[in-house]
Figure: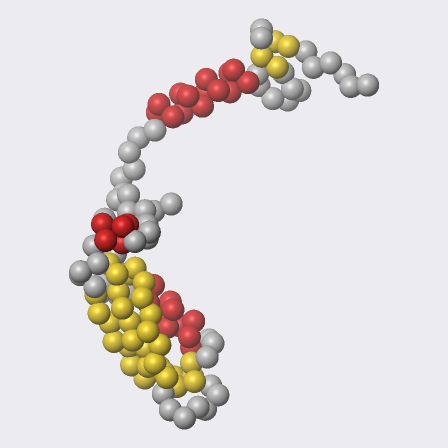
Length: 124
């Protein structure tokens, strides 16, 4: 029914693919040759900290007054790129105008506290 797959010195050979043992040996060499990365392993090591933001804005529905959104994320001072991207997304969504953004860096929430509560700061 099916053609027989020829064996090569104890390893199966599939047309167009190296024998499994050779491929595994090559992979082992690649793992041995890995060098440490020249960058921090976690966001925390890169300077990111837990940030609380209070964003006051008017919405497009013309509600009764300004709305306040409380938001928390890992971000890096002083530019806060994650927070800035979120504020821009608000302007493309429900917010008509940003009135104020108040930021508090949570120095009390260390990487160990975050990890104990199930939040990883590892880069992937």
